[in-house]
Length: 430
Image (cartoon, rainbow, N blue to C red; front, side, top):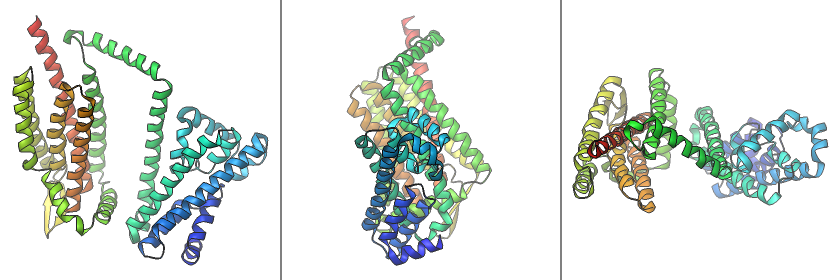
């Protein structure tokens, strides 16, 4: 790798183009490392960021284009005979067939993040005669995204890149796997939409029968239960990592990235974001939600009770968790901060704003209002969390734990509210 970096420093954009071009032909070259060092050289002012991304994108797209036409012209017999020399043997062809049957052509976009897959997708698509136009749309867009992400990460991390390389690579692989799973879900839904809806109706029917003592069970209850299971799983994983003290590297990398992206010029904005996680937002929001319940809701007492329980109970939960875990937080302004796990601000943001948004989702049928409410909660939570990390008063793992514990709390209370609502309605009807 020292030789490649020396060439990179001497010849610059030409080395970037040639190295990534050859890697896409399945030669054993370290593409991620090269792009990371390219980002480091951009950080040091030796290379230009747009030209680096342009050279890398051109190299990758040229490589995957040539590999596609090689596979297309020579065909399956040639690949069977000589494919093992570029890691495209019979086993790899079978594996790629399985992947494309499951994930479809969208796999091309995320294949760059999956080791051993990106090098042979071009040959495979050519051999299987995938239409070049379809291949180019997904493969080229994925290539540009891949090189832009790695070069930008190298630029942001700067001289810390070598220390963080293994950690970042692990998260990139996880990102690739998660993207592939998301692609699978979208592809499955699009291809089997009618069957999926039919299966969902069967599931709902079984749910109604199972909970027949409660009457008609709303889809919202099942969705909240699914969210509750997901957040509980994440919570157990967080607790396990906390006890094993495995947050250090994640906190170091995430903090460094945020502080590199958001410099001193963001201080005033960050002060504003921090206010979003305080009583200055929660107070008026709670009051407006309570007034709206009194004026519009049918089951006023029930919803008001849950509103105040979510707020007060959430504060009690957060206080108890922070005392229980008793985690030493960052050192800010020369003082050691304690009891930062989970973040009080992000847990409260998810709890209070999430419950208010739920009531909006529950009582309004306008899709624009529903979508806006969901995105507002997500954006607000992210801004509050970033401000906590920016001012070094909480670790990134504290912020993430606040999201997860807040998600557990809000989904649990939504389920309880809907069940009590149904029981109360059935009692009135009886």
